[in-house]
Image 1 (cartoon, one colour):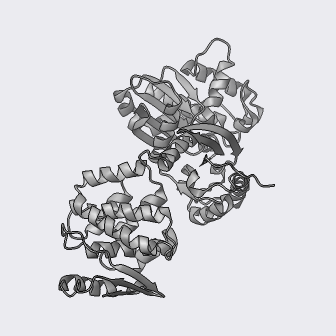
Image 2 (spheres, rainbow, N blue to C red; image 1 turned 135 degrees about the horizontal axis):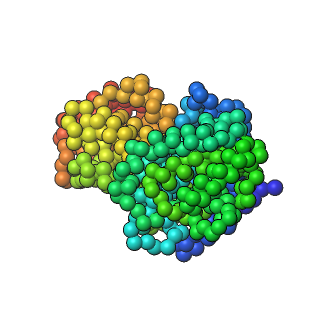
Length: 499
């Protein structure tokens, strides 16, 4: 039996290293009302071998969960669903093949987001549901494979760090045979402190007035701490030590039986507690409150921003890049207008989705940013800057797509560039790159007078641009530009004709 969703619904899917979460909400007058939640313990991180290859068993668990999630999302438009993969997806060497299977099973695209992007979105989700606060908040999220640390004010993250330590990884590393001893806990906590050491001074120096813990690990610890003798408001270092001592006394993960500890959290809780102990010591946290909001709530807020009239975070990111690298806004606007004018004519024929049109728009704005370093090879400089910058709002795939377009917007299209574009988005990415190249050629003279957008015809492999009568005859340099471009496009299989 399939589930038909009602209109006005949005969904966020968080494919974490330990559990997969999905939340579905109804958007009413700009406000979100949760109508359904699903959570399944998949333990994807435990299936990641030393060679960084996901095991077939882990993949099978994940796909079985995604099949159930996909049924719940049946009939939901793609633009109303945002699914993201986090640390284990980032680390898996075989993720490309697995992602294709996972997307086909879920029925929606899955973005792999960088650690800092995960932290930024997470902070927004946590802060949104907390009372307003004068001053900064510290938010710590202990996931299965990584721990996110964020300092911010309001709903804006100001400092984000993603550290390679998580409850699954630490439990397997320090308590792999299930035995819990004081010495092992000490080593696990010390390892956490070493991971935190590079940012410890920064976080203490900036300061915070409240500490908040997110994720199932922290909420489970808070539940257990409240059941301890004495009265505790939130999580304290004293409470963490009491839980540590109780776990050591029980001696084994299999024997853990603490009030508030659920069976599905038992196998990873000791590693999570050691990480939280390290964070309390490193950042001198006096007390921490737990929040049930996390990455998925932040994803919903971001999704609403993309669907409504609110500014897309990615738009702000692109604008900041333009400012930082002193992009010629008038020229980029000319190129953008021409590129979109060309794309509109072939949108259906080239099977261009809103995603491709967004990428065309953003790459048009950023194609010259590499000139801030030098003119020679500026397309390569721009691509490097995009690929290695922190771009809020962009997934790893989106960041790679944007960098590939900027790299391919001029000069020779060698086999490596062509293979990269096709790997990212098939022939559509290549077609977007061609449209960008043509828009740049048309506006090469940087004329302040509006340039005509040629009529585009596509017949088989032939891409014909029909300019106004006499336009190219009066502009021999532009004609020479298109003669050169025709030769450069031959490796793509596209035959360019400009008349």
